[in-house]
Image (cartoon, rainbow, N blue to C red; front, side):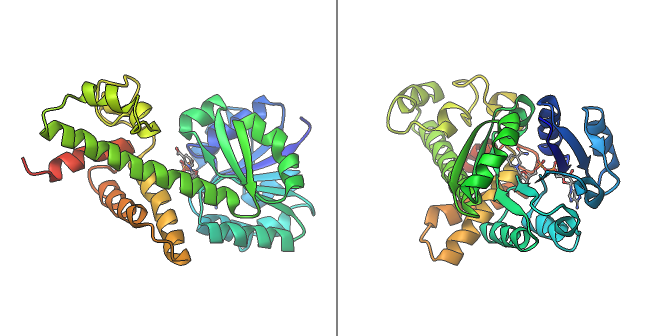
Length: 298
Ligand code: NAD
């Protein structure tokens, strides 16, 4: 405790994360462009600031939880955040952004005399509320050590993945596995349906065989076998399809840029972009099983 943290971006994730920092005894000065979100955060012990620049003055660390890399870079540079912070301030960007943007953000922070880590998270809004997020960090070990009290206030686990951008790299690689495996599990259930195999029978076999994976056993895309999965509540998220589409697009962009032959990753990005842009706009990403079923000839 005793640390003053500026928290910029008090949305679905940032709001509860800032509240966890307050609960851990830190002074948190926050800002969001949406006045209602700033009021809600103030109700949870965050000191509201009139602007992002005002929030960082006097802060020891700056946490950003913003939609995209464009938002982060705009705020760091044109928005004057780096210029307004005290020299040596620790910048933690928890947003999920492009690896290249994360490296650019690091460089800009270092050039301005600060320290920086990319620290994207997994665990969703429920994990943010409960303080059970997993952080994946990229940057120097000494900065990771300095960030540890803040990360442990907001999450259950933090993995130092390597140099600048490594946190974002781990995040998009993990979510590429998840996106592809959810499509695989969904196709297997629909194939089972066409072969007259019950959902429960396929689940009982695959969940204890080599088809076992998180998409099957934690977020099962058909109702029944896993009572807590979004399929049992009409695919209310959970992890929304638009966020999966975003993460797969970041992975696909990185694969193209690196010349990686990620055929399923690119296809998964396409399928999720279509799903998120239509019936999946407000659904859990496991709702893609319905698209597989709809596209299948009877
Ligand atoms: P969100 O849209 O709810 O929150 C983002 C907030 O940033 C908004 O409230 C917005 O008003 C604010 N904002 C944008 N520009 C700003 C600026 N210049 N100054 C101040 N505030 C500004 O999004 P979210 O769901 O909280 O996600 C944030 C990030 O976390 C995204 O990169 C997302 O991909 C990632 N993420 C989300 C989840 C999830 O389950 N929601 C899980 C893991 C990672």
